[in-house]
Image: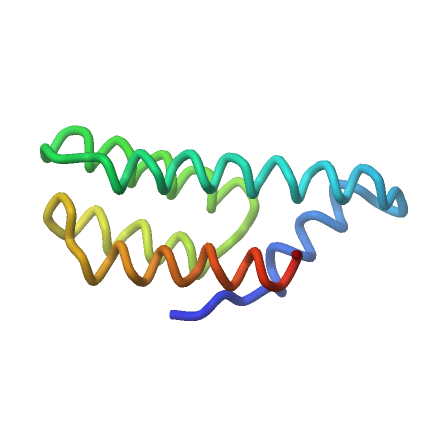
Length: 102
């Protein structure tokens, strides 16, 4: 699953209006939280920590209407802690997000 900017961009635009500084601040807040939640997911070794990290990632994604990230978080919730396929797909999303906004 690749990064799709449409819904996230629309959410940011609706929240920031015509204020480019606020848009940048919201984008940075999303990126920072995304990195933090993905780091927690990578470090989770037990079912409980994995589920909490995946739910936090899903909550972040839902807050910003990042539907592809919601789907990836759901995949993590359905998988086992440390699932390399899910972690690679989420990491790819993060990289593509960074490349889009970098």
